[in-house]
Image 1 (cartoon, rainbow, N blue to C red):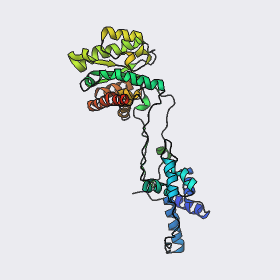
Image 2: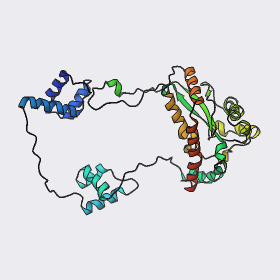
Image 3: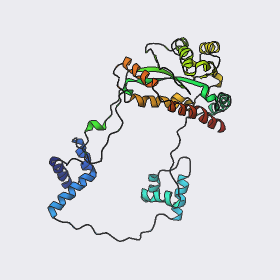
Image 4: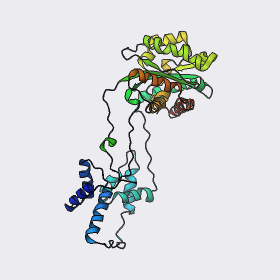
Length: 352
């Protein structure tokens, strides 16, 4: 049950109501004084005060239908149809101004007369014609590494930044029933401009996730550092752990990061693990085809939000623990959907 409004707050509402301020303005003024009170509550307080002052009041008389001319004429319906059935449709508010009617009338024309439904656009990456052509041509090459059985033997890795604020993070929401007096602190989420952070390298496959490799904050991630500290350990330790004797049959996939695309890295792979996707087969400008960027990194940060860490070393331990116990079903679902279905969809759409 919501707490009763204090007598002091009621007195302020009545005083401002006597000044003929709107209920919304009274609510805003109360907020400036640190009191959260919905305009509906303001309305109820003023109504109760009027009832006390005047005694029992008769409810307002309901007027019969006025039989005003309808805005939903054939001409207006045609105008609305022309304005909304295009790539960038006019807003209902803009149409209401043009037709000289309410937004509700425009909404009825759209939904009832035209039978249209609103659908949210899919966010996609802006691609130039050159990038579209490259995606299409490389997509036909990249798809040879995929298939119902091949998808189970493809290993992809990437790096991501994780901050201390990702652990034990403050939620972006709070609960209210629009009548509770909520403290100001509940309605704010402070953000730090320069939180402490670390770079973490992770690899995933059908069989699970690798160890989380934390990159030294002072280190420059060159091709040599990438191979010595991350790639060699993934290839020589994690792949045998995940696949056993079949580790040599696994295809390794990178993104286009400088240390990944370096000749030194490519030559090392040719000698130590020849089964990998060469640079000229990679799909550039395609984060939706990278399972880690596509979903895993975001899910990892959601898991970290409920964990506590106050130092970088503590953050590193928490990340290691979360990655060790990461749900295999989520990895497989993301791995399959990101690498196979999205790529197939892109190739069929001729790179668009």
